[in-house]
Image 1 (cartoon, helix red, strand yellow):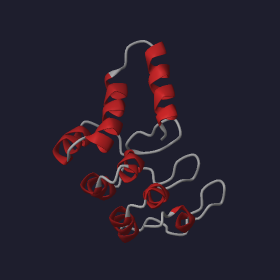
Image 2 (cartoon, rainbow, N blue to C red):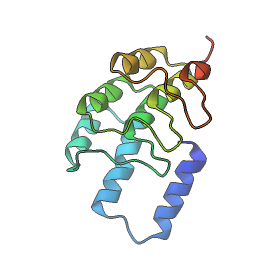
Image 3 (cartoon, rainbow, N blue to C red):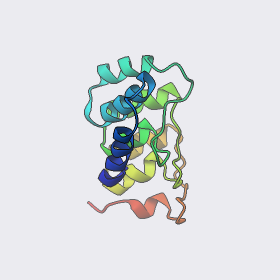
Length: 134
């Protein structure tokens, strides 16, 4: 999610009544997956009762956030939990985001855990086209 999408999300939340406990947890889990440590993320994950973790406005899961910020340890527990959506509304997978940022180790982790290397986004862009040259 871009900074602009993130700002829109928080502006929408601010316009509403105070956040419910579940909404606050959703906000927290996205922040933790980009900025937090492994132990804190594990604690937050235990707070969700549903079988799937929440997604943001564009359908990105916490795994998308961890992949975009190269949080390998967090991505690993999210994958192992099997509770994250693997594709957002733009059909981008966490692997698209990791390749776009040039995070080789993250890409290896995602591929090892069966994230489809041939997936295409809504613009029919293949993951390998997102890769950065190092």
